[in-house]
Amino acid sequence: QKEVEQNSGPLSVPEGAIASLNCTYSDRGSQSFFWYRQYSGKSPELIMFIYSNGDKEDGRFTAQLNKASQYVSLLIRDSQPSDSATYLCAVGSNYKLTFGKGTLLTVNP
Amino acid sequence: GAGVSQSPSNKVTEKGKDVELRCDPISGHTALYWYRQSLGQGLEFLIYFQGNSAPDKSGLPSDRFSAERTGGSVSTLTIQRTQQEDSAVYLCASSPGTSQETQYFGPGTRLLVL
Image (cartoon, rainbow over all chains, first blue to last red; front, side, top):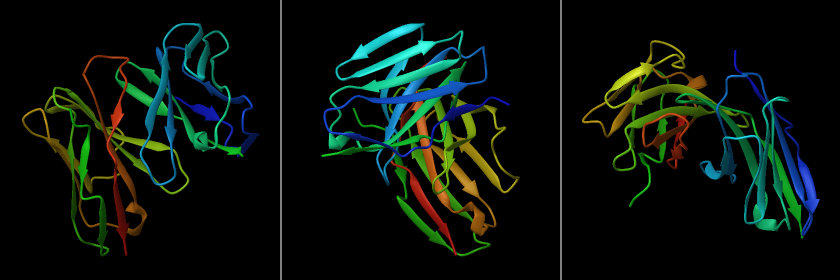
């Protein structure tokens, strides 16, 4: 069974700090990797996707992928209170995404 | 340019009743997905449509659950003889239709079975 593991948190960081969110996955055949943000009571919204090993940067967000270690991470620089949410890691194989249970991030002003 | 829409946004029903949940995907998206999210839990895959056919129904929890899609667009998830454990948020997502693509989520339907 394909599994995606995330630390449930909560992860608490001060405003302006770097938040580091981690995810491991079991299926070596996974091809695509996504980070979604979910505010309480809302649906998931896409933050970033990454397909190749290495880093991918988009504004304050950097996704990192290491397929050999089956590890994907999300770094949030200059964290803001508005970043407080649950972050879901999703791993894709063909059409299907498998989601982790999410890490709750709290950014303290 | 509208996103994925779902209706109703909230549904309260009595145990044993049937419910229908509707999803309208992004225009032109051929792939459509249903997920379920229980309180404090991750997203549980239910079913995947490519066009009007459902190549993967493996996540449907029981034969009380069924889904259809017509005209390659709107999809309906039906839960028959609802049980209290069916209470959850039901999320629909769509994507353009090839592999490795981002799924875009609707706002969800909150179902409460009393």
